[in-house]
Amino acid sequence: MSAFCAVLVAAGQGTRFGMSKQFVSLAGKPVLRWSAEALLRAGAAPLLVVVAPGQEETCQTALQGLEGYRVVAGGPSRHDSVRSGLAALGADAPDLVLIHDAARPLLDAPVIEAVLGALEAAPAALPALPLTDTIKRAADGRVIETVPRDQLWRAQTPQGFHRHALMTALAAWSGDDPSDEVRVMEDAGHAVALVPGSARLLKLTHQEDLAMAEALVPRITLTGQGLDAHRWGPGESVWLCGVEIDHHQSLIGHSDADAGLHALTDAILGALGDGDIGDHFPPTDPRWKGAASDQFLVHALERLRARGGALVNVDVTLVCEQPRIKPHRAAMRQRLSELLGLDLARVSVKATTMEGMGFTGRGEGLFAQAIATITLPA
Ligand code: MG
Image (cartoon, rainbow, N blue to C red):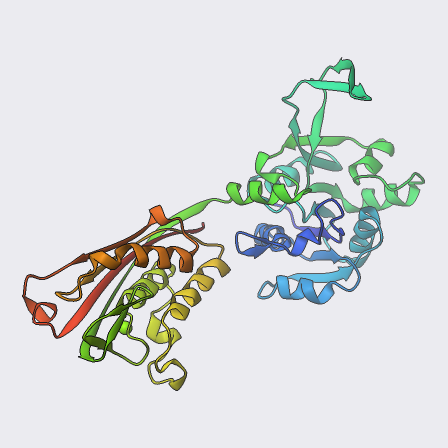
């Protein structure tokens, strides 16, 4: 594939979206990071990311850890921003340039390859989708006519150009700000090639588009398990699955010794491949002495959400001869459902005894096991 550079336009104010959508989280990653990663992965060098003046630092934070990009401040319109990006590319940048809107985060390699491929034969190329709906021209709520759609296409980005041809066409352009740069090439009489676009390349325009994009992110399902045991000792109550139960003994531990919540926290961390509860909350740390264990669970959940993850279901089993768990099961499920923000139907709490056998059978301690299923962006 030929060497190419890229301009990622992320300077929009998000008037219709209600905020700067390029920094909103999409499946755990800022919207503009999706395209930046796709372009860098495809080999864009350099990549110029154009943001509204004053948003440079926010952009650096959103792209933390990536290499090969530079951030430049754009202008009042999209077209001004594209010009800022092109001007900042430098003379030694490759001749082929892709211009992409950050508002189209789900950019896949095949689209990039198709646009670059078309530039071998044409000075400009863009991905586009044919219209499938019947198109009506209307005014004041009444149809004027049905418009033949066989020659109509929905233009997407990235749009690709031979940079020197584009710069020449831009210098000669005297009209208002064009809605895209292909328009400038059309006007200059250049051939513009169409390549197949992608339905996944939808543009985030309104808030509800974000949910649609989320649904288009490929996800994988992972499962984790957690085990925990605590010893019985003197006390008057026991904490299990976030519920305090009157009992003639307590479980002994550095925190509140809620073995159910500990097992469940480890199950979520296990699904994430993110260590165990002891890594995140060392028992040697005095901060966690007597601590309520729901904060451990909430912490694991935050780690999950930061990765764009979602919890599918949890299943906890408590193993003890006493206390009887059944009378408290509904309260435990309810508490877990609240802590996890998970529908009650996806929260299970079960209990069993070991019929007098082993350490739980002898009443030395309580054992808990949990399984959590999650999804993560693939
Ligand atoms: Mg424990």
